Image (cartoon, rainbow over all chains, first blue to last red; front, side, top):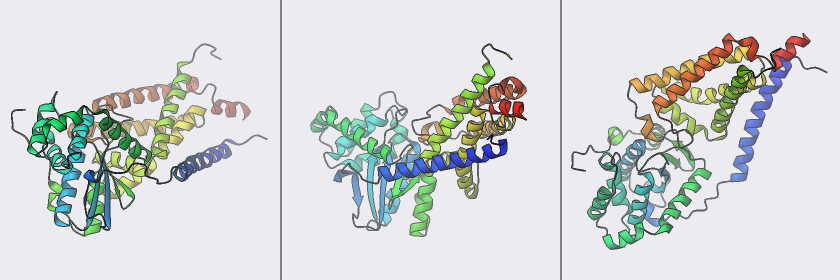
Length: 222
Length: 152
C-alpha cells in the first residue's frame, strides 16, 4: 500500500506534534519540581510567609537583570510584608564578569552582606560591566558595604564558593532557565522584565514609578 | 542522473536539519524563554507577541522536516525564504534602533552570537535557500518529491 502525498503530509504533521508534545510532557513528569539546592538565608529577603513568592535567576552583568532587580526592590520597599524574594546566581558564559561578580556577592553573603552588595552591583552596573578588570570596583563595593576585607579575600579564594554558584546555576537549568532574568512567581515561570512588570501589575493592581528606572550612570574614575 | 556529489542535497539536508534542531530546542523548553526573545526585539504589539512566540518554532520545525525529507520542497523553500526575510528585517531593525540585545541575556547561552553575527547568518541562509529554489531540480534529487513524481 502506498500513501498519497497528502496523507503522508498529514501523518508527518500529526506525528511531529505528537512527538514534541509527548516528549515535553514526559520530560516534565520525569523532572518534577524537586528543588535540590537549599537556598542560603543570605539570598532571601522580604516576608517568608508572604503570598507573593519570587524566585529570581540572574546575572549581575545583564542589563535587564539590573532593571528587574531595581523594580522588585521598589515593590519590596513599598510592600515589605507582601513579597518573599530569593535570588539565585545564573552567570552567563559570555558575560565576562558574570561569574566573578557572583563570586563576590556570594562571599558578601557569608558575612550577611549579600543584599547591600547586590544593590551596589546592580545600581552601579555601568561602572564595572565594561571594565577589563572590575576587581578594584568590586573591592570598593565591599568596603562600602561594611565587609571585613581579610575574611572576604580568603573567601574569594575558596573553591567551594565557585562550586556553590555552579550548583545553583545547574539547578536553574534543570528548571528550564536559559536566559536572564528568569523569575518563578508563585511557581510560574516568568522570563524578562516586560513579563515581570505585567505580573507585578496584575498582582498589585498598579504600576510602580521605578518601572522606568535604569541602573545609575557612572562618571567616576574607574 | 548526476552521480557526483550534489551540493544542493547537502544544503537541503543541512539547512533543514539546522531549522529542526533549533526549533526542537525552542519547543522542548519553556514557552516563556522564546517569548522573551520575541519581546526583546520590541517589534510586535503586546497582543501579537504570544502568538508569534507560539507559531514561529512550529513553522521552523515543519519547514525543516519537509526540507530534510524533500516533501513539498518548493513550498518549504518558499516558506523558509519568507521566514528568513522576516528574520533579516527584525534583526536589522534591532541593529538600527541600537537595542542592547547583545547584553541582555535574552538568548541565554545556546546562541550567544552578536546581532551583526546573527544578521550575517540570516543573510547566508537567505542566499542558500534562494540558490536551492533556483536549482530546484538538483535540490529535489533523493527526495520524497522525486519518489512521488516517479510513481505518479
